Image 1 (tube, helix red, strand yellow):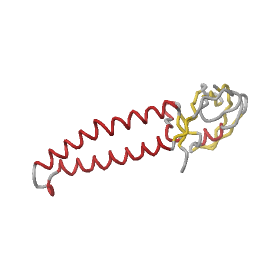
Image 2: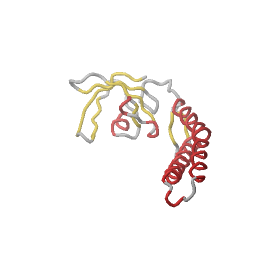
Image 3: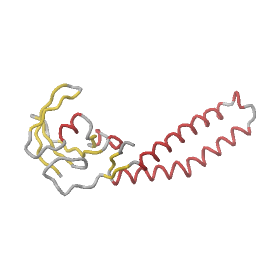
Image 4: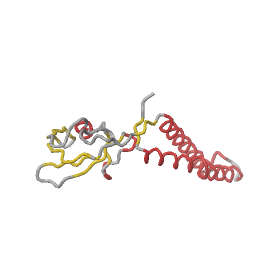
Length: 153
């Protein structure tokens, strides 16, 4: 079983979404299905087919979230801010650009637009086990880039 690295907040979000999907959303879909079935001829009933499609998607998402929750490894906040690890917030600066701060998380929580990058991404993996002051070269889809680690939290 692969471990799924999540922050405590990420695991909490998964649990909240799971409760929503298993409760109100499942009930809503069941009501839509009952209503569509009562309309009769299911072979040409677009509402029925859409509800069945939505149900399959919902159940797939529930299974995915349950798997993630079951296999979650919660990323503990490191007391060692000397070395970059999963869970670290790292401030880096590329030459001639403003500094940027990234939170290293597992792939399931990655959201680069909001500063959360996977420790498995090109930048994330290049940062792992590095220290403040280190210069890092990374091969990104846009080409090679160099930056310096300014701060680790």
